[in-house]
Length: 576
Image (cartoon, rainbow, N blue to C red):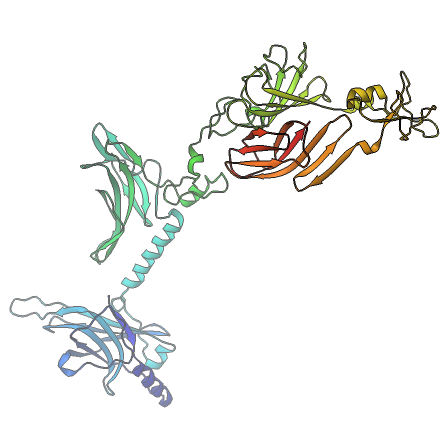
């Protein structure tokens, strides 16, 4: 590759010529053979004319021409009567002053003279000089002829610009339809005719081409380049290479671009590696989580999700499968009616069922199970993938009737069921009415105006510590344990400490609650904020996401909870 500069000596001389109004006259070429000259390195602008011993030829400028007002060209023709010599240095000078204006460092070239049967060569060399006002200062008015200007660099730049613009559209490689698809017929491999782009160069295969595949595994590559001669039409040349690996390379000054068409394994199976369509086509398939397609294959990069199976039924709990609308009742506009075996049915976290009690087996005794009875069942969590679970049951026939159930195993006593009180319960057991003076009354037998009937409190609270009312049945806390007694407010107790909150009611009822952070795959001990007379019932509800945790020991003062999953935040409730 040649290097060209305008010297600093020329700039200084040109300025002096402008001051005196004299023209800038460049009239001579100097050819020299400089030992050790490296044409790849930049030229020093302060460089001078080589020593006389290295100069091999001097010649006057043959022709001058104007390219535009800021560019002129000086040319010399070395005829067949000139030679023999080699040169790698060319200079353009003002002969009168010896001012060196331009320099070219070039690879060594040979000039031959025709003589004694030897055919000489004719060489043309030109200097295109560009600076502001070049035409006016040199006084050159004749237009430059095409032979004086080397368009090679400009045309090469145009070709490179077109190649780069193609890569903006098609990427490093792109193929269309079955173009350049590697196929197999029996034991013979072939490449299918069609078109594609590699490195921005369009390659066309006009007919199917057989290829020889030896040792496997191996890949099939398309190798393309853009080449030609000064006297030929330039175009894309392509070839197919079978190799384990191949990368872009340069050979004899021509750049080659490669792309894998296919991979062939040891058994002869073919994997298509061609990028499909333009970059726009590949972006058009972007769909999930706004993931960008792979630049080479055009596939949306979803990892294992791209190959994940969807659930095969509404109760398919196979690990790793994608849940569909209606799966486990999620997003369903209508639930199917099911009959289940309450001992063995495997609930899934988040699952919702509509259970027909008639026809279901092993129904817990606490759940109504008459004819025409249906329950919605929503699983809030599972202990493991077998039988441990927590489920909320709501009666389809009576939406106000609900239960919380916990199943520890599939035994006959595996379920613990707690009925949730509703408004009717309070109406039955604790009606509050007053007279016109807003006095509260203790409800007697059949008395409609009521505070709390002592007999009903005996049923609800176990008959502990009542306060009596007066003969007029006005509410009183002055003492007394008779039939018309009421409960003193102070007998309801509550509090909290570092272990959570607690409440106690007359009759011995008690509950404790706390919010716990459970470490991953480990056991956590919860000490109750207030002890129980005996081990209570325990309920666990997740705060953030699904969970697998269960109790691994319940005592009167504390309990153990094992988390069989990632770290989790839960609410715990102990009831007595």
